[in-house]
Amino acid sequence: MSVTQRHGWKGMTRRPAGAAALVALLLLAPQAGALAQGTTALADCQAQVAAPDTDDTAILTPQRGWQMEGRDVEIAITSAKVTADTKPLVCFRWKLQSGQGKFVPVESARVVQRSSGNLKVAATVPSLGNRPARSDGVYTPDNAAPYADVRVLLVGQDGKPVDDVVTTVAVVGPQDYCNVPNVTTRIDSGTIVPSVSKNWQPVGGEIDFQIKTAKTIPSDALIKTCFRWKLTEGDPGPLSNGAFIRVLEREPNTVKVAVTMPHIPNQAGRFGRDRAGSYAIPYLLVPQVDVRVLLFDPDLNVVVDAWTKAGVTSVWFAAAIAAGTVGVAFLALWQVTRRRFTAFGKTNPLLCLITTRSGFASLSQFQITLWTFVVIASAAYVIALSGDLIPITTGTLVLLGISGTASVISKAKSENDAAGDPPPVDPAAANAEAIRAEEEAKALRAKAALASDPKEAQEADAAAKEAEAKAVEARAKADAAEATAAAIKRRAAVVNATDKAKAEQDAQDAEKNAEDKKKIAAIASAKAAIAARIRHPLWSDLVMEEIKGRELDVTRVQMLFFTLVTATFVALKVITSYEIPVIPEGFLILMGISNSVYVGSKFANNSAAK
Image (cartoon, rainbow, N blue to C red; front, side):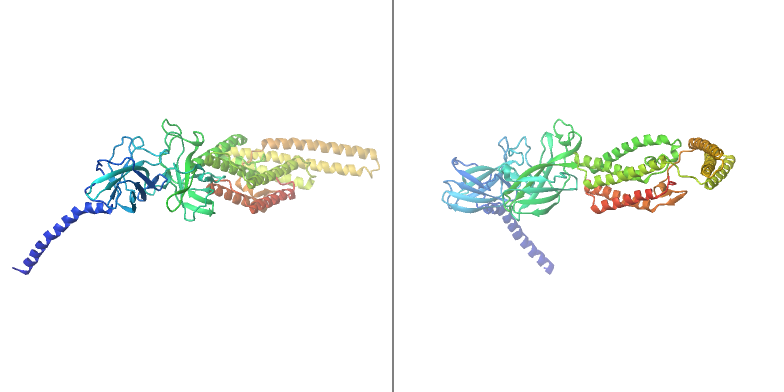
């Protein structure tokens, strides 16, 4: 026999012994499980007791009436059948309205205390599988958790049950802190107060809660926040665990936490026969949720169980509401202002809103229009988020006041300049201006004659007619200025004249001639105004000043820059914080200074400015 054959034979002789050992282990496994409970394999959870004592009692601890899967319950049994040799078998099953079901033995049960007629057993709540439907099972009054029957069989030395004690306990799923029953929790165990300014958040946003109680909160207390859709009709169903929780403040009787709004499944619609959601604005905006805040001690006893409500909002929906509100307001103003421009296609729609009667884009009007739309959009956005009216911060009102005051003062200055008497005109300067206007009119007329395209020819002809009317106006003003200067000279000569009667007559004739010339100039000005084309505003008007030509105005640049920076700050804060922010005092002072400098510069400019 070879070496290999000898080894093979030895392996064959060893295999039957190993197989026998394996079979023995398998046969002894049930008995080992039974021994873990302190009983024999002859009794099981379905066994019947010949003559159980009906006056036996079983008291469960914890006495709150529920326990979580995987945690221990202690069962204190009082029975005359308890002896030194009595061993317990603990079984669980769902309590059904039909009263039927199969008991499941616990995996771990041990005798904690034994005396004559008394036995205390610690058993781990087993997993009983899927929870029964509410129509089939027996649930706690708040429908949070189903009840389970707990059966303790007292087994004698012969392995046969001698007594049978049954009690009940509500069973909560593992780690399902949110759906613990509140049947044994006092309503006044504590209060929860959401943030007054913002008791709503979009999914992923943080909402603050302050928890108050008359009890002393353990330093190692477990804090859980739970959410479910708030309904006006139907069963709201189980609660969902909140997302991330941050403890902001902790005192002996108060805890302040920030909770991330979770995604909550199974949202109800606005209208429904079986399930109808609750909304901050009924059937319209901001669906509401029930919020439950629980504080547990290390033994899972509830220290605080308080309820409130909150709103779950949609950022995209609120943004659409804000955009729609701004769009409607803009279109309404646009329809009014666009009527001034016959060739509207050449004018930016935004510039139409801030254009003066002379056709220039006004910086002060731009500022107040910008702030008006920023506040409108912000208010619509936050109202759509919260489903309620919101407070407008004092800083925002101050900014509106600053921009409005600057606009009113600027307009008053422009109107005053237009209504005031024109300053005396130097005849030589007026004549030079007339010559310049006449040459410009001739150049434009020549350009119009060379235009080949019909539209260009029409535009060039209109420009030439406008220049010609202005040239006639300038010549009329030059004649009026010359006549006025001559009348002033004739009037001054009366004092030293030898023939005062003739000098007086000459002065009167000169004054009458000057008045006639002024009337002719006024008529020419009116015709020039009629012939003038409507000026199309430009964005550069916001930073340019018209003083005998265009020049950059640094006061306008400063005001425009600070306005855009502050408006951008407010808009970004509204978008990211979901509320109209408090404007820092430094920004308010900055805006006040820039507007004051701008208004002061308008008074410093001469009347040649537009």
